[in-house]
Length: 278
Image 1 (cartoon, rainbow, N blue to C red):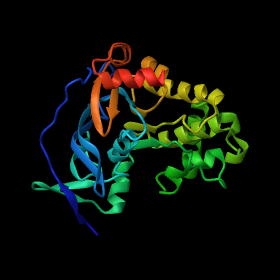
Image 2: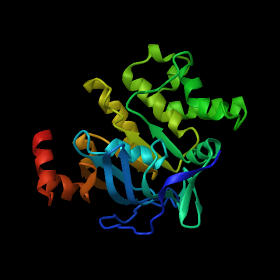
Image 3: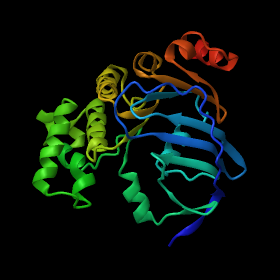
Image 4: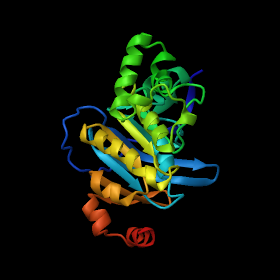
């Protein structure tokens, strides 16, 4: 049943710091406007304004509890918001506009709109009883969006792309953590999403396995797909991101190119974080 959303729409947007899009992908523009999110009496996002241009790679950095993962999860409506707006190419994911109010969509419609977004979690979330190929193809086969043969051909292509074509018939227990995360990335790509969200994709990995996952994400960035990555990998953010957004206590403290934010930050809170982390 459609229910009235618990927040109202706002038309104010701040896009200071948005970097020009240097890629050609015309889709995947994420607009976050005055977003507030609370858990009970605790507000975890304090009026976030952020625009991610099509094809842009944005790295979200900040200490634990700064609201990075919560913000990421609001983009595909895994977390609801209390006020503000989030759209992709002008379309709400979890809501429909009715005058000045936003009504939360039925779950089926939310799932349909969420197909435009791929998400990779900290934990791999693979089905243990399915092979790597079956895990990759399940977004298509579970919804009967194509024939099984077409889905398997696409799934094998994606496993090859992440370097795991030779392990298509392996079960998750037979794969390393890095391999499982690469399967999860291939699964997120199965529906060719306009936007990819990564929530600390290497945090559950042993250090020696981090590089193989980051290399896959680097290749996605080179292909011009819109990426928003929550990460603690400073060197990765410096190398791959078009823009670094530093958050603390539910607010964006500063944002800009990696050279500026990581090399010569303006804000003392950013400098303090980098001193402690590095």
